[in-house]
Length: 234
Image (tube, rainbow, N blue to C red; front, side, top):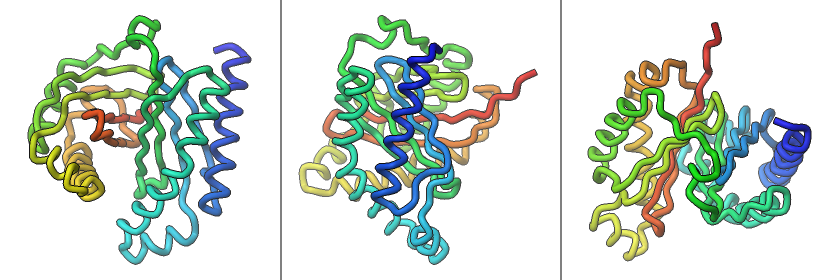
């Protein structure tokens, strides 16, 4: 990584930290920005406002999630515009999720560029077959096996899984009837339950897993999973 790339990552982290601090009253303690075209993955640590902490202590998890979703909808256009300004990448897709138990979060931007592999991005291969089996199994428990699943090694700590063709007919009808928010809550609860209760993942990636995030774009019939690893170096 050259100095220009480091400076770009630093400026993105600073800008997002300021946005979140202004919107929530408290910003993340740490922000890690990874750019690997056409993806930008932004990992947040120790991000929880005093008010949110009280709400979580009282069991109001849904209230915190709902409030954050509403606020994020207002911030996403500015985040995407800033990413384009600094990187030249037009973010066609944007995903976000929170690990409230860890006070963590993730943003994922996907730019409208060519095939990721044609950009020189490394497709994750080590353990891919085993991970693919587990992802398909969990997807089938919730809706169906995706039409396509791709695995990308963003950096040594971040594996990004991109799924497309994920929805069954009843889910599409629920969205048409206006139940998208309810569907996303149900999907997130189920998928995270299966992801976090699966003891195979750490064996497959050969590393402790610090966080797992997931989000959907129902209108594009796509979803992402982000594994944040804590690699052990010899």
